[in-house]
Length: 357
Ligand code: B12
Image (tube, rainbow, N blue to C red):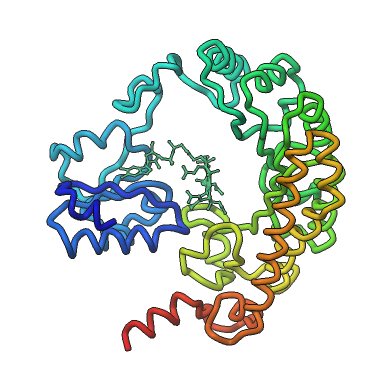
């Protein structure tokens, strides 16, 4: 950062998701304190909380930045709050060079995806492996699966979310369990390893549902599990709903990273839900399942999976130990949070108080 501060730059652009917004604000304040540079902020969080971001930035650009960023940086736009203009065609973007993607790109357009894979293969734009986001309807297209494999797109994140159909309906996820099974089998056939993403804490979900989802992910030979605690991000309907129902238990944005409980769940306490997150990691990453992965995808992946198992068990253990130590850490606060309590005091709040002293 010091190097950047001394660079003589006259504009700094900072992008923030919710969980790193506090750090973004800290950097913006530091830039203002040490330089005369202008700070422009954008991204998910400033888009939904522009007034908050404007307390630290000179200008905030909401929504998509490409079409306005140049005018803004070069001083032709001077409003403090700037509304981005959506791109309809990637070629309208000033930079970087997206020439490989010549026509409008639709993420769910399979023919377009095939075209991109073919170009990647023909122009040798492949890496050892590349990770991508996919949907269960991949299973219907063997040609696409083969091309993905050949372009080394061999690790795919698919949102299973829940095995409870009511919970799936509540989040408008148009898929069912059979779709997921079929997608997993199809990926396995083409040696594409699946990362199963599961949301923990949907209102319709009970503990048993979450346990079933983890079992299911093991059953379909998912290579990785991405358990995500339901996180009501500002700007989303679920955030509005939980605010209205008085269920938010913290507004410390750094905790909004899908790994920490930030609201009062419907069917359990916040700590029980946090424990489910650890439980998911521990159940999924065990040494037996590493062996199965080794048989399916090779020894290298078995070794990687063993490392995952080790690291996740270590993390689980660390969080559990912390939850018993009353030094203001977030796990302790979460474990001891009672319905009706005020907002959780977290490490950050405690540290800020300590800084003031
Ligand atoms: C790809 C992706 C990732 C990738 C790459 C992340 C990255 N840093 O680039 C990986 C897999 C690493 C990842 C990780 C995480 N992700 Co992610 N990810 C996405 C995903 C699918 C697409 C993001 C993307 O690239 N969009 C395309 C680009 C072009 O759009 P964009 O980033 O929004 O930027 C545009 C505008 O916002 C604006 N803009 C952005 N920054 C700036 C800055 C300035 C100055 C200006 C003017 C404009 C501007 O202009 C851009 C161009 O139009 C989104 C979901 C989605 N559909 O958006 C989730 C998403 C962004 N991820 C999310 C989260 C929570 C995470 C993690 C915290 C998860 C975790 N627990 O680890 C980590 C954080 C990692 C990190 N520190 O960056 C959340 C963020 C929600 C929020 N409000 O904070 C999202 C929205 C998914 C969700 N759950 O809803 N992620």
